[in-house]
Image (cartoon, rainbow, N blue to C red; front, side, top):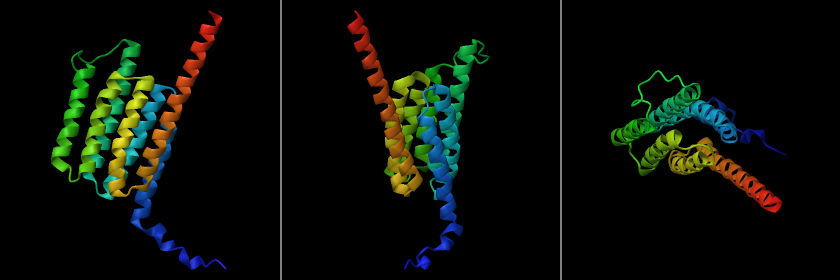
Length: 202
């Protein structure tokens, strides 16, 4: 007979349960975002996931991780705004400020500064490197190249999740890499099939 006493109901009233629950909410939103083919949905979904991840990491005790994710939100938002301005051909910001190089260098400098101020473990420097990777990728890459950069970023952030024992973070990064890899393989197979069909017609 199953002894229900082994299930500690008090666990649901522990702060750690709710900290992890926020992380799992971020995880599901991130999975949805990484499965999107449109870059706008991909960026917007990851922006929302970053907000929840910032709260999650802050509650788990990583101030660097929290600050890094908050900057990540701003980076995603600016990238989205700049893409909208380009589509509308009505950018109101100075050309030098909207330059991808300037924006990438600004966010990379912020990430390095955060590391110098708050990094206490090598895994947190992995998160800094992930932020630098995404700082350049979001402003210079699109499509499959952006998703490849996202795989590299997730792999680096996985180190911090393992160090913090963030189960939602570990699951998110592993599954996000799997989803992104599956999407890239599907895209490659579709392109390869199309090329073969065109070659057959010729």
